[in-house]
Length: 167
Image (cartoon, rainbow, N blue to C red; front, top):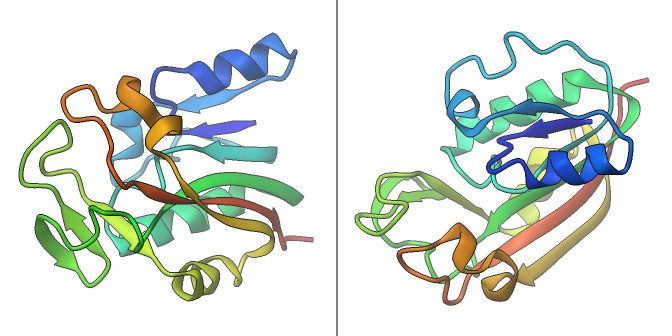
């Protein structure tokens, strides 16, 4: 399993506890221009709980393409993306039509891209068959451990399960 932007490592730790091997791309590497340079697939699955929330639309598209190339045929992607229904959409510095970087707080300057169902579907469908696309309020899920300085209020994410179209 590929864990993109592995954060504290909680996903990888849970996978390894279940006797599944996880290859981590840490947060610092995930934000570089070549985060997958030393990674070799194929992987049966990939998970990204926040790595595809952050970055411009162009960067997220490039990372998603790279992940799709690392997945085995019919490999599964479990990922979280930002929703335009998130209270933070439109706040901060606009970097592109869907991307804003907060001006202050614990994520000051970190680009966040927000998608409609249609724009996210368009991003995924060339490489993935969407199995589940659910818009979820995540204030309680992400919680204070992810946003220590300013707890989330009105945060909405897309939870995606999609299968690689590579054969």
